Length: 104
View 1 (cartoon, rainbow, N blue to C red):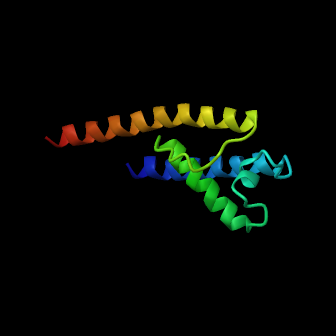
View 2: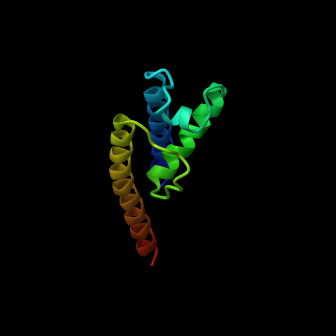
C-alpha cells in the first residue's frame, strides 16, 4: 500500500508539472487556467501548489470545479487524467478490499 501511495504522489507531481507547463508554453494567455484564476503574477511555488491541488482532485475523482479549464489541450489533458484517475482509484479500492478480506 505504501508503494501505491508513493506512486500516486509521483504521478500527481508529474501531472501538476505538465499542467503548469501547458499554461507556460502558451505564455499564460487569457484563456489558460493561470489567467482565468488571476494568478499571472503569482510565485512559481503558488502555481505549483495550485497545480498539485488540481491534479490530486482530478485523480481522486473529487473535482471540486474550482479550476476553470480553458483551451482544447487543457480539456484533453483533463479528460485523459480523469480516465487514468478512475482506473487508479478502482485499482486502489480493489487492493484495499483484497487486503481487508485476506485479514479475515
